[in-house]
Length: 436
Image (cartoon, rainbow, N blue to C red; front, side, top):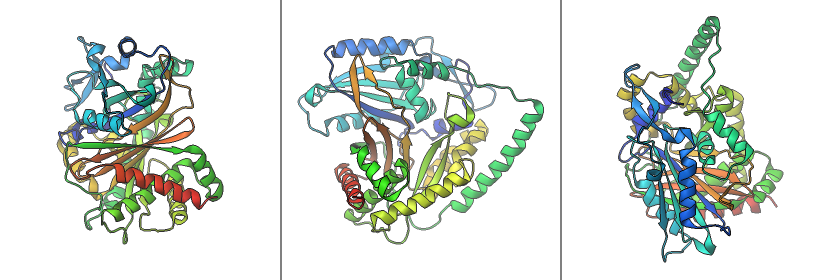
């Protein structure tokens, strides 16, 4: 990947990065103990494997052409040991200890003069478990691409080796001049449609109940739900796992806002739901994203009605496709020249609240038995960056028999994540009770 130019969307994530809006995403992966588990051995293994992943040795280098652009180049002083840390939780073995530790770590910005990633091995969890915390800049890749990179640190499987190989393949360029012209014309029409949709979707009315002054402080919460309960809900009411997830989160946000004395009547909460376009583009590097703007019906009291409304909304979005509507803003960002991002993107990021109130992403993970030095992966909680002036960001992933939800909140606006975690659990239980 040496010399690969950053796309417009990659540059946009660089421009959005700031002291109170760090654009690194992350994950907390929890492993059951194995007979050979020892912190020193695991750290050495992570360093050894990181050295073999070409993607992890790349740093950002400014480019002259296009102005304001950048490309990935090998760091001549790359030392994987500087990116791998080990910490012991000590005497604090409470359920929230890992979340508190990870929150403090996520507050620390990445050094963009080096390859923009870090991992931290955290030991001392109850029952001999340990965790691997991952942090990497969003300019590096999206959530799907991040798995391909992280897979190189885990015990090798045939499919993970294939993922790493795909991540190193350059984008194919096989278009004829006529095809390139046709694509350019088509993209111009798509760009105009997306831009028009964004302008129509902008909301000049009062501040969102999820708005908050930007802050560098972060708090995290981890929630684990039974995938079998989702299957029961789907059998009773239809929809996809993602539809059920959005319904559960809508109910949780409703309960949480009411408990905080916020009004939920009058308007829904609007979520930006990222959608991977990786399969469409055929590439593996960088960010390949679109999105949907979806109204979360927090104003509805009935959990089944919330699910039905979300099913209808998501069906409309899927029928329109990921290249239309205001939610396709990432596609438009990917086609904007780098100099424009350097001038305008930071301002546009501050106005994110005009378009959406919260980011909710569901990171697809393959159904694999993943392990680190023989210790099986039991839980994995993804973390999405907070947009400017947002109080909450939510990411989820399905692994094994569970739905894992990572909550990231603005620490200056939200004192703790306990009430929001409880609201997610109660919302899921409520919807399940209406399904049996």
